[in-house]
Image (cartoon, rainbow, N blue to C red):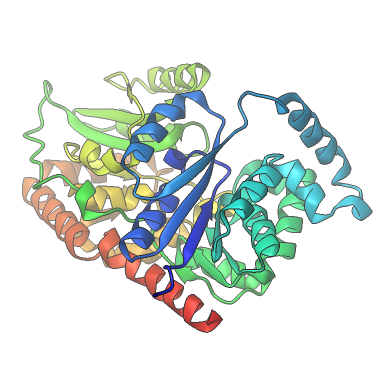
Length: 418
């Protein structure tokens, strides 16, 4: 009788729809012959239809931890508030206190994961790290962590707030050293973790998408006119401040070319009103078009009809300077050229993208507007850029190519544990 394939448990405190890297990892591992179980959160009602679509097609089993309703919700919220008050007191800054301060569902995730009896636990998002470690300890097996972000400087709050800094630092100091496998979403995130925490350099696995997410063929957006303006497209899970959108509005308002700014994602009414007011003050010719969120599997196809994708990031907090977001690679798979702001990570990537990307300075709005007018008005340059983007998406920046690094790392892990 042959031994069953190793069982890998992937954990995230977030929704599966908000953790596309976990979905891709789970799918790749199943296709490679592993058994896979996913433990995920359930706390944001608008994301549940997106979750349902993913889970209905999943080839792996899953457990959802409901933190939005049911018994214990009030008690866990109170526990988090208390933990955040106490975490600043040095003797109380323990890993367990930090876990409660960050996400009080972590112990529930760990207990549910331990019941799975996996051969390896793989944490996603910061809350997934302690949950994976605790479950692995219960089962006497190894664990790992996927660093999609540099969590010390993931947000402005993480940088400025002492409680956030202490909590994140405590979790990572305690648990990263025990990781048998670590992956990162960009080379600079991997380097930063090695520098700050002394970890072995993580395996870089880019935020690319499967070829099945691409349109069947390149999409022709059509000629640009007053009636059919150039579509400049941006997407994220959440549309909000700190993403460079205000600076982009100022640029578009100065362009001669008819343009339409399209933004896709969850957005609060207050931020929608705020950005609309910015556009009115800048005299942007056309109202911003806010589009409904889409499933991760549809991101490339939803972008394919745009003239340009926007991969605009600010350089602060530090994580934004180090990361390579999934939108970069969704645009390549969609076959559309894109604009990159000059963060450290995007400057390093730009030479690999060649004609498919243009680096712009979002804070030189007049100069940038003129550059965009010249580029968009040059039909030959646009065609060449679209062709280049399509080829890069089809041959290099896709999950079929990138997943090889994950599977190689997993083979090494299990070979060494035998």
